Length: 221
Image (cartoon, rainbow, N blue to C red; front, side, top):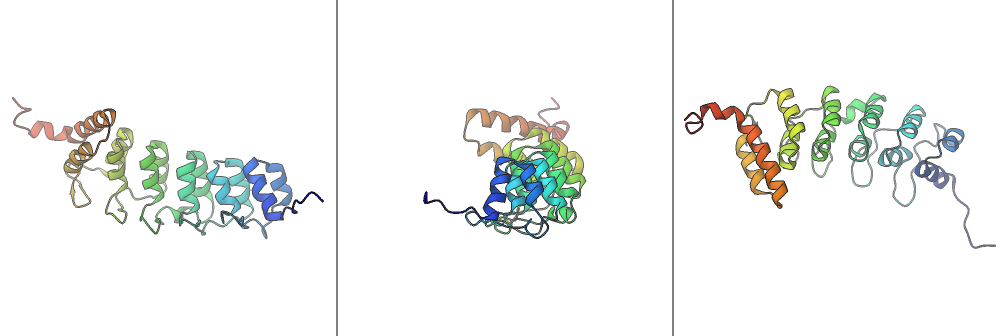
């Protein structure tokens, strides 16, 4: 006896997902065990797959009927995790599954943040575009009354702000969290903690306010 304990089937399947052993999963996963969760982190096989960014594994588990409705112990959905941990093809795979689109507007219960908001925090323009094209609302607000567009501007992601502004036909005076975007852009600049961050946010502020230049008395002289 070497003192070791037999590995349970669930542990074996979780290890296969972590190690990227798709062949083992294909031989062992069935509709009856595809939604099993590990005892340590309480994550399903699908949650593990999207967290690790494993596209082929994610597609396989979805084909076996992996559930999309469950939340992890921190109240994030599969789509939240796919957005935060993966890339656009992984997110597309989740959205293509039956029930996937319903996760677009399902917020994190503690913060009210949607998958699109997480994409905007990351600065992922293509991922944000994918989510919006599938129906995500860029002007929806979280529990702090902050929208995806707000978050992109706050983080200094110029390309994401440009895209969302165009999609929502938002002018510099579009109200976000009850105040004009131009006013909030100024506040973001003041919140900068480093010189490079301040420079980036200053440039973003100029971009947001460019439409006001023609109305400025100073700019017209």
